[in-house]
Length: 239
Image (cartoon, rainbow, N blue to C red; front, side, top):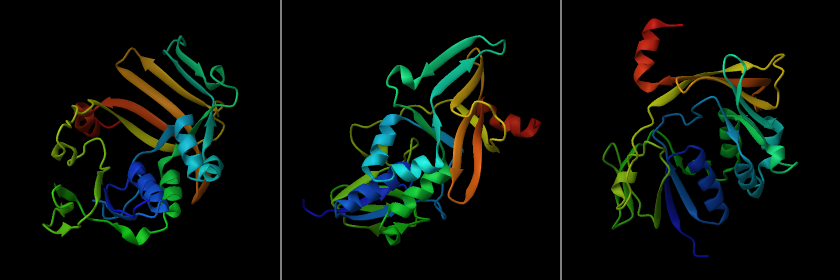
């Protein structure tokens, strides 16, 4: 395989995984991240078996299983206790399950697995791509490159995707969520995602997300749905 020089824009989960996999294929990988101090964004998430398979191929599955929490059931109900969602992985295969994980844990494991952390350039927002010459321009006006390949991994609100012909941005999703991490304590549903709904207007949930390398306390990810347009009002009103 011919060695390529590759630029990745964005050091989230996708950018981290790409940096590891492409470097292992002996390419020269450079990553640009706009945050001054790259780190995880968000509380917890649920890794599905397909994602776990990728992490297995990256030789990271043992570390993920060490810190994550197995999730075998997805359950949602109304305030009066009527079940509206009840899915178990065992209905597909007895060996399948998801893994609830803290974003900080996965970020740390992926960061440690990249053999060339010196090729990460933080506090560098890429705003333009010169596709003819394989270069990228940062917000300060500096050009970087040339590269054989430029990969835009700068998230769902990508500023670079519109520069690629034939690609479009979908409208932003109007809902978000308030979230925090809580000690698991005596929470009885240690292997379940639990949610409660008021029609489609309100949703609250708790997901076991295990530990992270710098914190051995098992935790839950708490989230409460909220339309983005109502966030400022919620901040003003408080709890």
